[in-house]
Image (cartoon, rainbow, N blue to C red):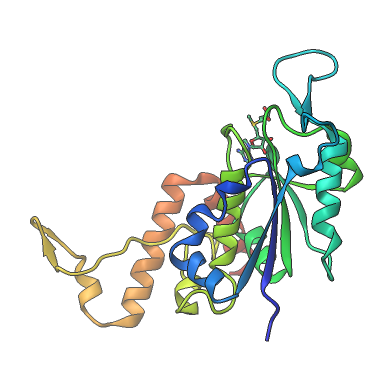
Length: 239
Ligand SMILES: C[S@@+](CC[C@H](N)C(=O)[O-])C[C@H]1O[C@@H](n2cnc3c(N)ncnc32)[C@H](O)[C@@H]1O
């Protein structure tokens, strides 16, 4: 039996968790012991009586910065009980974009330690000291790393063995073959004058597969030229 995937989340707002991760697929998996969640309240590691976790940016500028000594102590706490090393990730708009390939790798790992920033972010030195991996969930700025951490966890947890019913449906998903997914249809066959594409009613598996591939390619080419270019290159190399 595989050990549960072990997620430690360092946050100033631990009460935000498990939040949406406590419902549906991830909630069931949490209940079934397929993953574990440990919250580390960063404020517990402040050393003064006001429990200060931030200070003004040196060099001037707006906002506040999370202190390296406080964040360092919280990281040590998360590492204290781990028997095997886990990736340590800081969620930040400055990070590498989160992609399905990294999500797949994370789902294979023993777990993750996630650092959620607030204010203007975290003092750079603590990131350097711990060789923290930096990941962004998109080119926009959230008010804190907690929702980003939940996004990363949700994407990872659904790939853990035993969480999703049908492994086949994972293989067909967007990004798995470098393409966006084909469109889906269900009953009724005709809805408000709109018919389901005829080929899907034929029962002809080869024709259906080929139609779906074609639609996936079309959608990717139109919506995501960046993905399309990479896909077209690998197709050319393999073909
Ligand atoms: C207000 S933001 C700080 C933004 C930072 N001053 C900048 O311009 O890059 C506060 C925290 O939210 C989190 N955050 C914001 N946007 C994010 C994103 N797109 N992906 C991941 N984390 C994000 C980070 O943890 C960050 O430290």
